[in-house]
Length: 513
Figure 1 (tube, rainbow, N blue to C red):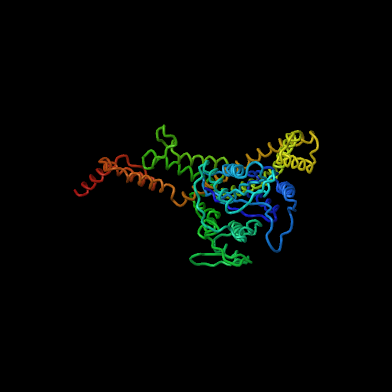
Figure 2: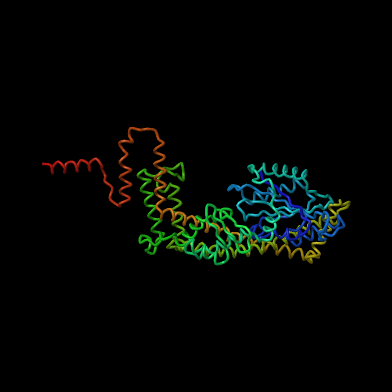
């Protein structure tokens, strides 16, 4: 089940909304939604301000008291999920929406955003302490227990496994504030290392560059680093797997053309990658025919032949992509990844701008529907009166005063729908291409180090070792050894090992005579 934490917001509601709806954390606000208010931070703040002031007759942005308690304006909930490759942002977002309805009902004012910038997916939910029906939501030990129960029950329906909190204490104010303001020391160090990895030839050069920029590095059993102005050291291990020193070294080697592997004579004849991958496919095909590779069928219903092997199919797909993109060396793979990443970032920036405006148009159309539905309704409830007032206020603020204005809104929204769908396809294609290029680089690294074929052979050997003793094994055990030798030295395979032995014996007897 997810971990659920809460933070009482006494001021800076607008700043919290901006953090929650940050496009960089929500894939351009793609995983953002709202209930009884706008999804835009500015408009959501004004909607919540109106309801709060109508219900309390106190200012929503009143200054904090220097002495004594302050009124809670909003409650910020964080619903965190255990890292799981089978859990998608769409599922997490749907669970968050279901949790809001289950826990707070239909009259709550809430903004929800699913953040996807961390290894663990998590929902940020901000609710107004007063609903549109005047009901007040409290945040205390009793209500949190009930909310956690609601969260668990909703997520249980999605099959989400239980997650135990590592620490019983909540996030410190310093940690939360740094996260909110984007002033995290860890993030600063990560960005600096990411930049230097692209320009440095080895780790020593990277360390020297960091020290020239004012960073302090402490070596030993637990290497750590301190940024200029930072009070305490941060261990490399706490920055993430990509920032452990050994992994930083590997990243530099990979960036630097995988060491000297791609500069070997065998791969320096114009079509280096094509020759490399085609050669491995040929070797695998021979081993499949000779029975020295562990079977790995693509289609269990068909006979096991080279064209029905998963490894050969994957290598063939990678080779096809290499030829289609006209990539001749591993350094060009790196260049293509950088080029594709730039296109991806540009598309994401356009997507962010379009999605934000799309949310505004959709919210305005929703407010128009609310206004049309409730305007002539007799005997309105308090919640319906508040919803109608919110709708009128929002439409007036955005100069929506006639059916023609609404018609223009609908046309604009349709245009944004089409543009967003097109950019989304571009982003998906770029994501797929970057993943495929990284897989090509990883495969090439295995091939260059001699690990690719040897790994498949060791799998076959391990499979044979587990088989029961068979009298025929003694008869046939020389054949695989001879095949491996022939492939290794590029010698023609002898058709009959028994005949070879007989010929050698005859020559020895003639010499003795």
